[in-house]
Image (cartoon, rainbow over all chains, first blue to last red; front, side, top):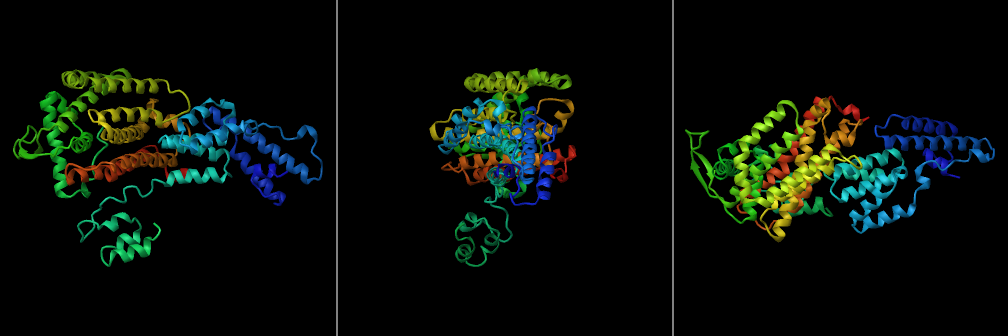
Length: 212
Length: 297
């Protein structure tokens, strides 16, 4: 019975006020027309309907009434219809680095069934293919559809931060020294680069960068 | 090739900078010799990067000499003497420039098309000479260019900026790897692929504002459609760095560089020159399109 709470992203014990606030925020988020792409708009619409159903269900539950058969949440959002084995298969292919096959499988899925997980896995596939920009876009869409999903968010953030520090290993001009010593080139932390050439490299590097 | 692949000159040592300049001047001279005087007009710094890599792959050591040239008749300049690497770059430059003109003749409108036609006429003899030497490379470039314009005309599937960029990457992979064997071929291909991908995205970001106004094809507009924000441009920057990291991984597999200067030039371009160039392009684009950090919210 926690499903509607999961959809709204609130704790089952949360007061009604919090539930209402979450419902309104989410509804605003998925308002039609906010998403440029046709495909995304359809997804947002489905998601909005799902949120509305969840909210109605919670209200009825909290009022102590049984859920009338007709208002039971319909499996409207693609997530419910999706062939889960497809995603398991894709995850397995990605784990084995067979991204070409994973991409084929994902592209074969009908557009109406493309949900957050589809975008997430497509993002993972494109990342393996070195299509980093498309991958970021797919992850962004996945995060937008399911903002509460930790896996999507952390993968998207990792994708954005993994290029940070690129070029840091290059010999930059440092006053008073010709080349970096070997250990300075290997370490990237600030403390190390600063103190390195002045007082006993090894000691400082071990002290600061152990486990680097 | 549009002059995006350059060094961060301030971080080069004097002797490295001199070699860089000497390669540039040497390439210009070889272009005159190999493909005719007209082709010298298309000289760009991008090919110095290719030349530096080819010196290493072809195991040649550049020889420098002071010479005068048409543009600098008074003061002699240090120039790299003719070599297989430089001659290859001169030919590749002619093939690429001509194919680019051919592509522009079909795609562009108005005075840009006229300009492309004029350039095509000017470069025709250079192209013929280069094609005679490298017919397979010309066919490959032509094939990839056609694939690219077909995609640009009717992009199908999921909106993607990396698909056309990867096609251009494949094209550059051919250019970088022509005539090399085995391991070296694979390393050169991978660097070429990454650099080509990067150049395509850099060019797309550079033209973003103008393409939006004139409703022309731009892969970034295709990908982001209506949600183009400052954060999207940040994503573009990250993905471009991702491409460079790909190139860097391949670069680390090269056993030996022909001289330490050549190595430094290559590393400087890949580690500093290209990222800072990308940053500048994206900053300018954000300014032109009035995208500020507030859009992030």
